[in-house]
Image (cartoon, rainbow, N blue to C red; front, side):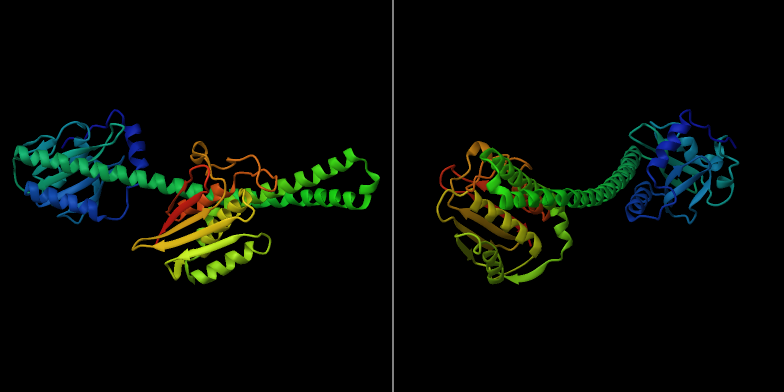
Length: 400
């Protein structure tokens, strides 16, 4: 018996094999289906997906035998991986000086015929084989050879897909960890920044109320500027915190609620501070959706419709409908509209379409970015429609 040669790139090959994290994993139906098909096509009782490490060949799938591994020095597959670019065939191992006295030939499972397709990675390393085995001499037809090679390619694609999925899972896990760290940082930063800002704002207000008469016009202007600047900065911090938390709103479960309840709650938020004409037009009586998410979306859109409206009384209409798969929403206002050149980037964070709102304040460009973030997280989509003069409507939908 001749022991298999050690591949020249053995160190690299073993590292490549290890990167698939597949050795000693449980059996999988996809691999078992391929070995079963290989046996059927080649008319052999045994078929294996064999991976060769430094000491053994281990079977990811073993059709027709119960063994899960054998020593590397006995493995036909360990010979096959030294010829990675061709089908390795032994018609009759009893007449081959490399195998005639191999225990796997002399005793069970009596490997007389062997044909193995090397499983070659994207890096060009032969990691193992898809092989078929018979207890008697055999010759494969060209059709059988071609099919066996095609099945070998499918085994390698399964391994590549597994590797990609593992990378994706790790990436998602790392992202989840980083998101938690970012959320914690945002909370701490917001708390630590807002506290001194509140103190500065309070002291500026105190200075204005108690000592305003002792200050000249320039000093009063400076105090007022300090007060407004700190107030704006607090709003910016709140907006960033809200944006960072927007995707976590999905942690709340879906619930069933009526359109009347939604209308009452939303109207109660805005009618107290603003004179607005708020109309709900719905063909749906109730929704089953994440309530916190829809509240945040509507509050942001209505707030924008009020702040950037040029009419004495902002008119806002909310239309809600449904089909078999989606809930559909339209939030329409009677404001000045959004110019076409600005519509493509209004959902980008820190981007605003106008310099000031109706109250003379400049926006921070976080509200619409938060809306889009929530809609995307709910696997929906949103877009804006406006002719630039006759109001704006935001159209979005969620999958039921």
